[in-house]
Length: 534
Image 1 (cartoon, rainbow, N blue to C red):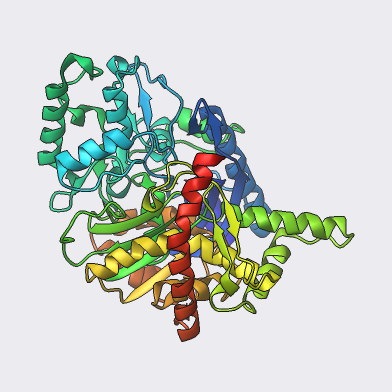
Image 2 (image 1 turned 135 degrees about the horizontal axis):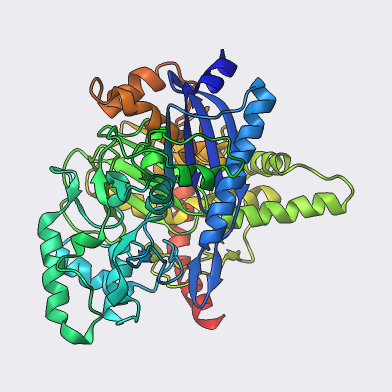
């Protein structure tokens, strides 16, 4: 049955460009919970001329490699290779800055969400708009270029995100899903479009700055932004050029419908069935972020919180941390090398399994140890740059179990600082889901996150596929938008029979993490000193 679905195109394809991996996920269009094949390709950002970037050449070589890997997986599993799909969706890291001229030429290297050079612009826009505009948002990057009068500014004809760029090359359509668009410019959830009042404020702001600033070649900034679409809205079809870009073998046929391109936050919400009010999710990768769907507007502006949307346009509070599991992965890599050097090599999965299980034997507060995972700047923690640190006092209990528990706690440290702000606003959660590779070892990171948040944390059997599966589900939703809301579709058609494991917060873990977080908060002064001194 699966082979027939693949041959006849009764499948949907989801592709997500994450920070360390490009993933492709193939699902049954009639049963999106059924993952038929996957593919992936590893890639890394580069630090060039003081900015984090990826080259567009790496985008396309990586997409082609991930797609080819998926085709190979489908052939090996089912004896069938896809030539067409019922629908395709593209997702990618949100925010950042991709600016193009009239001919579609990239004007400056892609500036990713990880850059923190936009502080002056973000502060000015936050003051002008009355809502928090984080450093990584596209409008902050654009406005910083305007304020700095960068030479490319007069040539800009459109600005988009990574998902929007890939979608446009594959379909010719300059559009964006509302969730991804909400990380470019503030969205009005009543209209599911850019906030008209804030567009007018921005246009007035740049006019008031006069000729000293860079001159945008448009009457309104709205002309530079992609058109916004909500989940379930058709967003174009694969062109012949796009088919050749994705599959140079020539097997893939053009004409396949696309759903709106979405950001990794939106696809993470879909992948965890967290698009209804009082639900939330945590996504852990190179960055880590939590999304909580709101019942009501927040009372105050908080620099720790972004206001974004679900793929359907509902308001979401987002706690986004630039640093996630990369430092943890570096420690795991060191132990993997030790195992190999000792003559007993282990697979990556076995290394993680061993270290995570060891962490369960650590003390609830990690024995007085502290781990900071800051490879890059971290606005929530007040850091413009990162310096990973592992800190202990002479009386700390320095054991492998405590060290690994500290490293896992460190992944959640800055996130917990932001989530405490939501607690203070009276925001309540009925359920919190988690996804990302670090949750593949059952019951460990999930348990520690439950202790960090003081709330139950659930993980589904698609957790490791994450956003690639989420965007495949959004593609499968296209024919159903007239019959079911996205929340109802997920609840009744996708997750009705899903295997979900829930970890309730353990009282000792809650108290232990609280003690760890108190030390963590005070120890940020050490981090700041390291940035200054090293």
